Length: 425
Ligand code: PLP
Image (cartoon, rainbow, N blue to C red; front, top):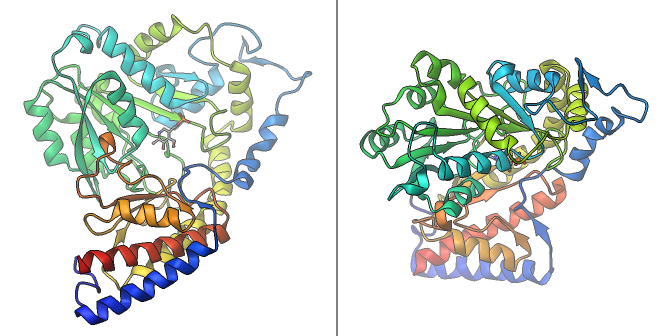
C-alpha cells in the first residue's frame, strides 16, 4: 500500500519529517513510562475474581462428589472441574484432565513426552533426523519457544482472515513426514484475534498427513473471551476429527488464567480417550495429584457455563472500551495515511498491527524512546525473525484507559515518522 509520504514531493516530505521529529522530541522530553507489551488483565479486572477466594474456608465441605479434595488422589481432576473442562473444551468430561495452573506447562510436558518417548506406536521424535512444527504467523512466541527449546524446526505459515493458509498447510503436511505437528490458537488467535472458519477447522481435522503421528496443539486459551454477547463461533474440531477417524490428532488446552487469576487458576487438557489416558499415565510419574482445593474453589465459583459466561461478561466490560480505543486512535491517527493495517477482533487479548516493510523494529525502538514499551518486533514469528519486519503485537488490556490512549498516540506518531523516513530513504 502506498503511504501519504510516498506521494509527497521532496520538499513537502522534508517538512513533514521535520514536524514529526519536533513532535517526537517534545514527547520524549516528557519522560513517560507506559507499557503496552503485557498480555494480562489490569489489576481492577483481576479483582472481579476475588470472591473466589472466599469460596473455601476452614469450615467448608471439601468433598466433591465423593472425592476428598484435601488429600492425594483423583489425578485426572475432581468430577465437577472435569465437567467444567468438558464444557469448555467440547469433549466428554471423561476425556479431560484438570491440572494447575498453566496450560503452557501441560503443552510442554506433552511435547517433551513425544520427544522422549514418541507418540504411542511411533519413533520418539528425538531419534528422527528432522522434526518440524507448523507455526501460524503472526503467532504466540511462547508456543514457538516450546518447540525451539527441543530442537524442533519451526516453519511459519501465514495467517489469513479465516485462519492459517490451509492450502499451504495441506501441501506441507501431505508431502513432508518430518512435520509432526502444528500450533493453533483457534479462537481470538494471539495476536490477530482471528477465529478459524468452519472450513479451516474441517480441513485441519481431516487433512491427509504424511506423518501418522501428526498432532495439533489446539490452544483454546481464549475460547470464552468474547467482547460482546455476539462473540465468534468456533466449530468443535473433536467432532469432525472423530468422524474422520482422526480423533487422536487434536490435543486441546485451555486454562482459567484470563478468567480468574493469571498463573493461579486451573488448566485443562482434552483429547481422545486414548490420548487422555496416555498423557495422564505420563504426567502421573511426576505428580501425585494437582491442587484439588483450587479446582474445588473454581468449580464452585463457576459451576455452570452460564455462570462462566456471566463472569466473562464482567471481564468484557473492562476490555470493550480498551479495544474500542485502539480502533479509534488507530483509525483517527493512521486511517488515511496508508501507513498501517490492523485487526479488529471480537475477543481475546490482542490486536495485530502491520506497518510498512522494514518498519516494525524502528517503530518499537522509537516508541521506547518516547517512553512506551511494546512487545519486541519479531516476537510474533519463530526465532524472533519477522522477514518483512512489519508486525507489532498490541496488548491493550493492562494499562488504564488514559495510559492506553497516550501509548496509542505515541504508536501513531512513531509509525508516521518511520514511514515518512522510509519514504525519504
Ligand atoms: N496460550 C495462549 C495463546 C496465550 O496467549 C497464553 C497467555 O498469554 C497462554 C497460552 C498461557 O496460558 P497459561 O497461563 O494457562 O499457561
